[in-house]
Length: 70
Image (tube, one colour):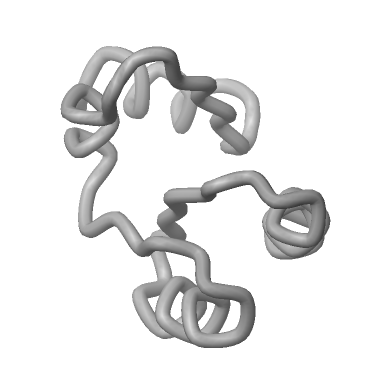
């Protein structure tokens, strides 16, 4: 699902930075549609403003881990 959203955003001219816990998936999508890969969620803090952050994580503990650290 996230890959298709990236593809659609890129088709509409959006600049997209993305990351998957699977580094191969991130690299593959970056090569396919010129998404700029991120190495960690911490890079979000360094994106220039204005920015839109879209997190796609399973509900529950994974959300807590992403938002507040493990």
